[in-house]
Image (cartoon, rainbow, N blue to C red; front, side):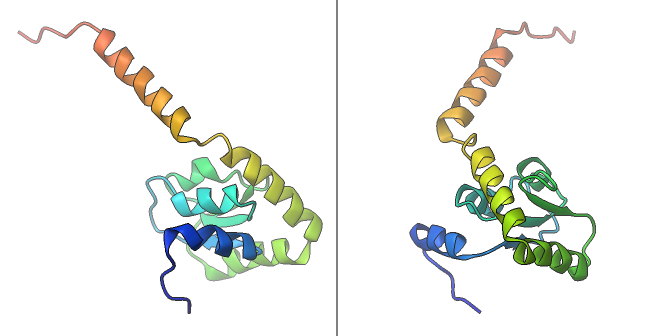
Amino acid sequence: MVAPVPHHLLSTYYRAADVVLVPSRSESFGLVALEAAACGTPVVAAAVGGLRTLVEHGRTGFLVEGRDPAVFASYADQVLESPALAAELSQRAAARAANYTWSTAAGRLRRVYGDLTARALVDCR
């Protein structure tokens, strides 16, 4: 067991890992998966919430339907036993993660607010 790690050191752990498991029951976004992917570490994650958006099954990592630990282990074994697969997943994961920047998120949010404020209010009387 590893004690909690300061945020500025997390990338060191992600880069040292061969694969990151994210067995969440629910996940609004999936920051752990995104951080791991940005470090080029393949992710095996539960197919819930935002993880479905961040992890592309078979291309950037693997998504697991259900909660069976054996399924998570099986996908992790695939990554660990195939350096070629691990390299492909790593490269694709890092490329996909590069699309998630604060400036991109801010631009999208600004467009949503712009769209909402440009619409006429509905008269409910």
